[in-house]
Image 1 (tube, rainbow, N blue to C red):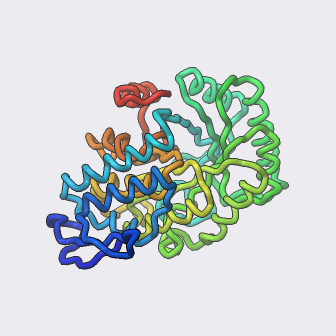
Image 2 (image 1 turned 90 degrees about the vertical axis):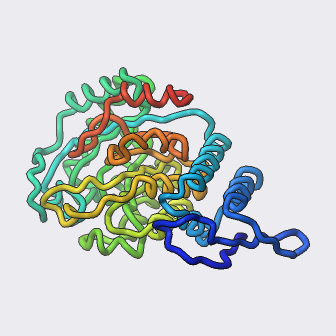
Image 3 (image 1 turned 30 degrees about the vertical axis):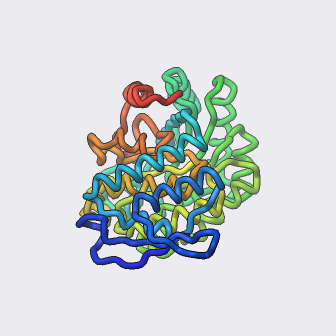
Length: 363
């Protein structure tokens, strides 16, 4: 374990020379090591010993100042090496369609589709199976690996007419696709509902934690963090893979992001969407401050330390990284949601494929 001996400045600025650390040795003697050595020590333990870093160690990494490019570069490179060791060069692309929009009963403060906020978002019912198939085939032909229907609303109990229609759509798509994997995102669900989706050909269920348990009441009060945890457990119980992550920029601390990652590790999540808030006018979070791009990249790197085997997936809002978006693919990212993301604009599949291949990944 690595211990912090002293700290004189905040994580936001200054040079990262004020940390001293102790590393336990086999002789139980301790020696002072610098930050670079600490990062490399943790990286090597993860790669060589399958070590799971502690919360304290993750917080230590988070205290690298956002303007210390040299130390951040060491962290980014270490995260990239962890990704290479556990995941290789394969890059996964997923796509989604907003299959039902608006009038959601929940009050998630970031969401354009909540009935509680006036955002001007489109409102329409469940799309036809023909339109769903058209979008699925188009995305498959452009090189996507996964395709998901996403619907607004609290969720599914197992006996809704909407669930019956969704089952019909998934079965219809499944008959007409080749290698495309089907995913689903329909809110808080019972085991019964999730079993029906699995039987219809769905392989992965998407349900974000969004933030930490501590911070979640600041995001939503119409359901709880445990409602989300239970949906994930229900999905896994019926044999579905789970895709679950969150949103950076809700007002949380970097410690909250770390706590969410630790919960995802405990839940054994293998696909982790990383979103950056796009503030929607009319929502309570419309005036949230943007997160420093280098803090986003630092957090992604820490996620790779915590979740070495997982797909870390660029999702909505990554445009906020601007020219630094490519850096994410060299500090832990190895998958992406591509195309148009629900109510915020994404990038094209072709644009993403070009960038991914330029960086040496295989699709």
